[in-house]
Length: 429
Length: 81
Image (cartoon, rainbow over the protein chains, first blue to last red):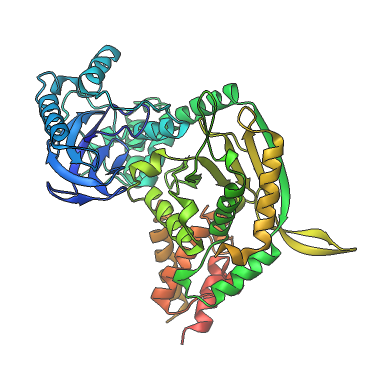
């Protein structure tokens, strides 16, 4: 199997092979990180999707390669010597192709096409780009520097704090200009000082670059609203039992091992999806149900904006593991490295705007996914029990469904199952 | 530890958890989660960091007593011996 420069977003044309995490002869398991790939959005961990052994490493660290370029040959169970031999030849010759360097990003469409035909192997699969991929690709552009020009081996990197990036966007300041004056990491104060200086000189700051992340969300959501006939359902769920149970559980634990209600809700969604799997998957000219559940969790980024990285294989995780995976996702989103599968494999989206105090959320589906689950704030509400009214902790759960893939009945079954699951929290452990 | 020292420890921990607020003045009497736009995950992280620095773990039932910076300083001041 040839390991190629992965596409980590619809508009990612190339990536820098920052560092190999393996050497020839190493054994790899599905999901192992083979290399760190630097995109303009930051460093992403590139994973392998099959078990195997590293047969030959052909790409060099520090070089920028177009998406689809062979980087290494991995021997999987299916590969015999002849296949490996052929793949090594193919990879080596692809890398020594004379036009490679000039074709490094940014490319004209024509050239991009050419690159594809040169580097793509017949085995490569075309999958529809998800909105998430488009979004991640776009974050690439908001984040750091302007488009790289023709020096792939010495890209200009602008190092700036999240707040500095945010201020730069607000003030219409080009971080690259600031970088020329500041040594080391740019702080918000540097950005403000720069903006002030520009104002004093009378040269108004250039119009802010269009916020590419905003534009990508705009594109994905427009596509969603244009293509997906949404239906919306919601129901209040009594969380009193679940929260009491969680409080007792947390009381026995040290602060480091506490479980947040968000993790409990995610775990409950996964359980309910196991009973109503039609909502977990894609629309690709027809409904495709995924048996693996990789919910994309909406997480706010420090510098503004929101992304929905996937909590991989949630169906195999108990409550503690779900909390751990959630912690990992949040930390990676807010400063670490997300992995290539976290960026691209979402099968459904879960959004929880509860921290902001809203009562309920009606979401817009990320194509090609077919559903989005929303939670509002857990609030105290009057609740009828028998013939009495009591004050209970209640969360409004909602589902936005793709009416091509499922009917409202499916959504209703899901919400009803979700409610039942949350009434027996001990089964979520 | 004086109240001033406790306050400084808390503010430094906030800067670490939410670096986008670094150097900003933290309002004394407003809800930390709302005024700093930090979510329940960040808040738990903040309490975890403070447990390490100050040696006091805040149980969940006391979250209401540490909602603002002022309350948080009082809470820890009472419990640090």
